[in-house]
Length: 364
Ligand SMILES: Nc1ncnc2c1ncn2[C@@H]1O[C@H](COP(=O)(O)OP(=O)(O)OP(=O)(O)O)[C@@H](O)[C@H]1O
Ligand SMILES: [Mg+2]
Image (cartoon, rainbow, N blue to C red; front, side):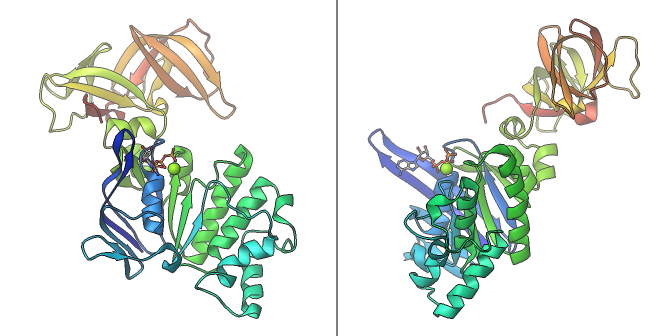
């Protein structure tokens, strides 16, 4: 279990203070895999370093397991080496002058969690097995591939069987295929060990695939917390809608009766009760929710339909995307690859009302 309450952290710089984390609240339940997702500079690493004890928050409280490791109010600060955590960084931080064995054994031979020699050997080989590096104990670390070094770092993080695993963009230095493979492996590993995990990434597809819970961050704050489905299907703000997955946006203005006036005409959509008539809004709809028909073909259901022209096409093997120009608006629709049409073709585009989301048109 990890609990973060009201944590703030700013750094003094020559341009004045930078507020990296601005009052963060977060709870990761026991055995849960929680992902901090957000753009560069939003405070992910700072948050993780506060949990690890590598940074001391300006204020707030952090609990790991049943131990308060930070409380600014009562002056508690447990140093990094005394926290029940394992850590994996983006730069593998594997020591080049040591063998695989010595790297993985390090927390058991040099830290406060020292164990007898026979136990070290047993635990190191168990950790290496878990990351599929069995038998490589004596290899010098410099002779390993990047992917293998990252596995060594992972083995070193779990060798003490800590209650909490902290990972900061551990896959971003690996090639695309290995990255995909390692996502699944890390999930299985943490699941099998029942480890509570806080995982940092700026890669939304990684977050959606790996997280039991996802916290979307921006500018030092958590904007939305939820499961992958909740974040993807029901983004609470324009920022989250734009950051997670592909999204089309259309500017508009609230009219009467659940309609938004837009450059595409009146669009029926679920206008949230908080939005007044006349207010500027943004309509959002995912490419896979747009319905594309060749002119003349009808739509199955009732809905908003506009005329458009196909202007570009991207083929991606299992899927394809068409760009559709409707008046002055460009929209991207995801289609099955068997829609036979060419650039310049006239099409009808359906925007199912229940798939549209409406956000106030204000920053953030
Ligand atoms: N040691 C430091 N001194 C001064 N400013 C810092 C320091 N560390 C981080 N910052 C600033 O704090 C903010 C948050 O940084 P942080 O590293 O937490 O972001 P991040 O979300 O991890 O970004 P990235 O995805 O690029 O790793 C940034 O504006 C950064 O410049
Ligand atoms: Mg970072």
